[in-house]
Length: 279
Image (cartoon, rainbow, N blue to C red; front, side, top):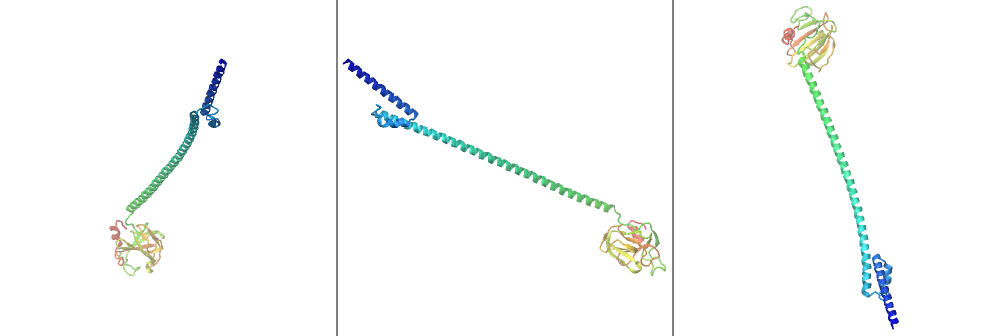
């Protein structure tokens, strides 16, 4: 009887140890996420492991929760990696865009500097041109101011005939002044004006006539050559020809006349003196 009770206690201890072992193993399997063990344990939880239905359900729930947690963690990791990658890509795009913006800004600034430099150079060149033109105009004005208003028709001369002088050399009284000088001596316009004649005129030989601003005409005859043409503008002292022997003359000279109305000659001597020169 005592032996029988001892065997029963031993059997009970063995069953208890087996139950504890199975429970411990199941807990470990749930913790490690072991699917095979849990699957095989599902049907036999009440038959071979000694687990009650509630314990089996708890074990299954623990396995499912563990699997879901692992899946969510994996998803979180994947999502974090994707977000990190997307962030890096955004940063890269932002950096590239920033670099492009900086490069464009630098190019625009350089273009603006170049345009400003070109505009400055053009303005400087224009100012220099204007200053040069002004200087030339000033010099010309100064030269005109310094230039004589009236000059004698030639140099190195002596007078061989005066106005109104009678003689057998002329068909009527002398109509001008004769300035005798070496052949080829320059003949010059006595005052600024326009050439209205440059031609051979019979007894006057080669003759040039100039009309001046007040309408007065001066005439230069017996030239050896012409240095001007009709329509030319001349200043006081401009060479219009050279002393010669053309026409009715007995020696090299220039016959000079002054015609206030362009037709009738007057005495050149007082006219020249009135304009500041003495023949």
